[in-house]
Length: 299
Length: 277
Image 1 (cartoon, rainbow over the protein chains, first blue to last red):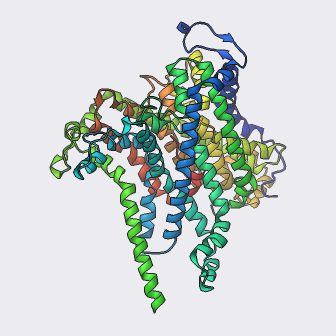
Image 2 (cartoon, rainbow over the protein chains, first blue to last red; image 1 turned 90 degrees about the horizontal axis):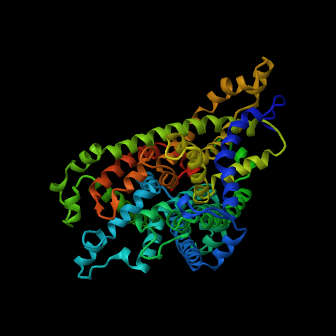
């Protein structure tokens, strides 16, 4: 086995990282759980803290806004991510060939991924403004009436989803493009010479070979979408009303709006459990230590 | 011959399609860059874009804005501290995991990876209460520590393959010479994995540079970082779009330069969760 040193202990090398991880990850998680069992106001002025057992969790289940935020969160995931996968796959298949400027185009398509989420949220908010926003300017020129996009619950919800698709499908594209490059061109060309029709080739050869990459992209996107906060926060602040209050935004509101830290912690634990399920699935399926080690040289 | 023409047509069609997609994808970025060179007034009045509007007024206002400049400075300091801490500690841990055999090695590597993917919202309420009670709220040290919660696991994950790739013979030769594990680590391994350290450092810095939620909750006037300061340029009655775009452009430049320069490592960098909200 590679790297079997034989002597010495790994503890001195691992200890600093373990201390940090304990201080800023493990302890806060335990602490969150403890807080979630209390009626715990944010500041001293909000009364005293009181142990109430699982009451916060029971209250959550009874809270209509909690279900609303969960519904919005799931809707976000189920609408945005499939579209990102389809767009990313289509672009990866189309651009998987050499043409002039191909490298430049692929690099430029990736730029939105690196657009700061906060800046992206604000830019989209700008584009959707009435009067001076780009979308309204365009529609007014066509003779359409002016619309306050982010003031309308349905449009605002659509807008945060479109923002996410705009920014993140290139990420899926990049992963799938790399996966496609890993499939031998011999296999693809052989199928072409055999006269295999494109759709047949796609479903019987490309997709099965690309399946592990697609799964990785899907899981990464789900994990990422579960924690979405900043772009929506600066774009709509969860409004109008509660129309774009996704899960993290509602947690934020519970803690720092309603000052109910216990409730917020119960939500935090709920989100944590879901995220861990997806993260563990991803890690076990696609990111085992053996795989990391195999990759060693080439990256 | 016919096949060749067909191929050429397809390639042309693909190129046109690619350019159309590119226009959509780059439009919001381009208007952000352009609006930085227009004044707030011109933008709010909804005038059509013309070259005559271009001015550096918004940039001048941004650079004169003390709070914003302080936040930019904080972002740089927090980014550097958090990167130094994470790369230092992370490199040691990655070495420990990849060059030693011990019980629970797999479980440890997995848990670092899973930690990397936890939502910040799940941690930030507890961190807020903890930091408030020990006086770390709104301090550079506090927010640096908070950023390490995602950067340390990230660096470990990035560096494991680099450490694993080092040939065993280096290790054996050094050990025959009676080299200690510590000396081996910093005299032999660190120079060999230097490219990995650079990549990990760049992405850690960007992670920290882009981070919003921890900064929003865990900092106030003293340790506020730039993403939060920029977001406060818009909201309520303040709609200083020009300044917001100018400041955003300043924030975006290092990110774009780094990522275009690091094309080769993007996939790995990103797959490990290199982009953060």
